[in-house]
Length: 55
Image (cartoon, rainbow, N blue to C red; front, side):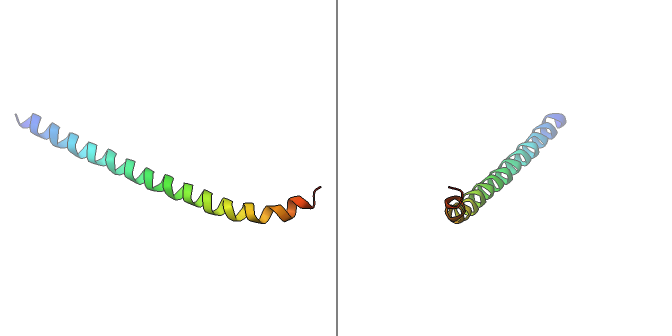
């Protein structure tokens, strides 16, 4: 009986750790996407002048 309780407690900690990693990865992915969108938009606004000189 003692082993069953310890095993379920360990599994609970493992699942909590996995969920924590998932949440951290989601936050990092959202931050990277936001940076890509906002920085990409600034760079796209700067490029039309430079591309007009190529033609």
